[in-house]
Length: 283
Image (cartoon, rainbow, N blue to C red; front, side, top):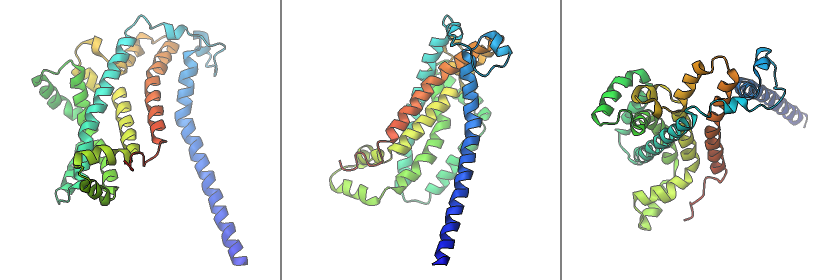
């Protein structure tokens, strides 16, 4: 009896230690990621004098910084970012989902070399792709178009999406596909009506990551877009560093508004994840 009590006390002590470590890690992450967001939001409401004094909170919620750039190209840049990010997400997922399913369903020795090749593609520096992609898009007449930028970004996102989605497809029980085949469902119907609803967590998470990455991309729009009217928010914010150099509150206000669509996408994806893994499995 005493031995059991000693073991139980040790287990509780270890659990308490791990909880302490977890709380410390959570606090560290909160400081690393939460404090910059807090400072960005608070600075957007401060006056110039409060920014100079490095005050923590504004004395009042001033909206001057948010109205300072309404006459600029912010709204067109917002539409451009939504177009590029949406197209990139749709193209990447449309290509990655069938590829990941095929690489999980096919039993062949070629699958492993293909996965290694996909991983190697992910390791290629982005700067090394500029000239080949520019020539390719120029030949297709897609330079200075949002579709061209989206295709260029999709070349980066598709290998990532395949690597993320393939384990999910490989982990589904083979009996599901066999039962679907007995009922007369082909591979396409099985993929759309059974596999994807079961893997909705992975699908929505991957799509959200691709959308956020495309939203924040700077180099590809600068390279493949020649007209400033087609620039997305990432380029607009980079230009605003010089435009609002003496107005930090305006720059922070632009950053806050540019972050809101990303926040909505993440919250939407999180809401979809809560609906569970087995939605549609009984259809």
